[in-house]
Image (cartoon, rainbow, N blue to C red; front, side, top):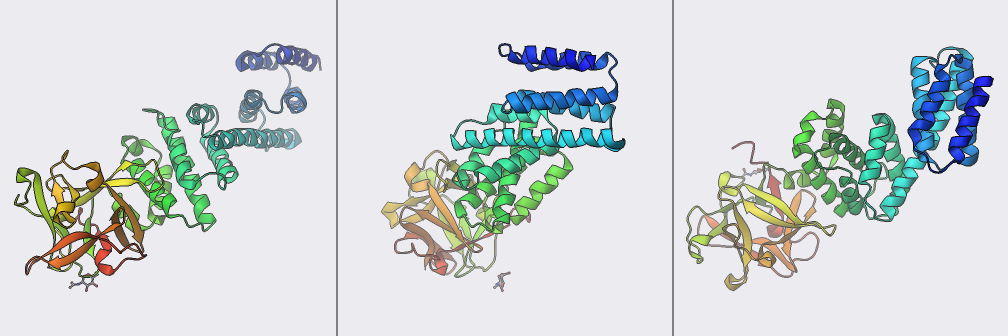
Length: 393
Ligand SMILES: *[C@@H]1O[C@H](CO)[C@@H](O)[C@H](O)[C@H]1NC(C)=O
């Protein structure tokens, strides 16, 4: 009992002083605990601290976290849950403290997200102080709190900001946050195309990040499961190896011509579809790059990978699609908005839609931007099926 009174004195004097750092406070506790208190007394000490926190410091995350960590050490080293009624009491106490800590941390995160504040440093504080499964619980609770209060595609980007450059712990936490958001979306059977675009883009960024190879196999497995649950058409759009496009109407692929015979001298190449159905080769390989994601529907550039030239629209040639050497296109004629219907992608610039049109000769068809195709879905000549043609080359 003497130890306990001594402790309470110490705790209260520290607690009512000016803002004191956490560690000395609990070093003090540890000192007392080390000086030979028996295991039962220690549990009483913890219970007293918890009582004091609950009555006077219920919002003090540092104190709750300190108690949680100390209790964890105690249970690990001295008092397993299975060791009789004291052990059981210790674990019940830890559970209660954990639940309170989860509430404090997840509400704080949710409030920051709601206020559009950066959550990076608070995220790192959480990730650095508690074990990964608990971090995951906190993120799940945060997503539950915030889900209906923010545009989902913005949450994807806010969670992305948890990741601090070159910091692996925050990289993993960022992934956990995106996963929690995605599975919440799935569980609610929600339907939101902007969110799916953002998430597919995010999944691609995560999987191609150099740190991804070093995250745990379990986390990788869960990211891969998420990627498989996204619409396949978006998986192909964000495939870092690229894709080919077949018109739904004729199943002819888009390709960039080998020769520079376009009217821009060395800077332009023609773009056509080729008459052989389902045929693809390296002249058709395209990659899509997000160049502006300030809105839910990002703006893209499209690059033919064989020559690394960018698709653009020439208004002086009746809105024909062609390819320009990198650096040449003006942003207005080479910036695309992309949507999808089922397994097809739709490419637009303002109120114009990219479509396979009239035949140039026996082998080739012109591609133009057509007006009057803003309905969903547009006609089949304006729907493009992405095909995985990178792996077979
Ligand atoms: C092209 O591929 C589709 C889907 O695999 C198939 O149904 C169709 O018969 C193919 N067409 C030709 C002409 O090979």
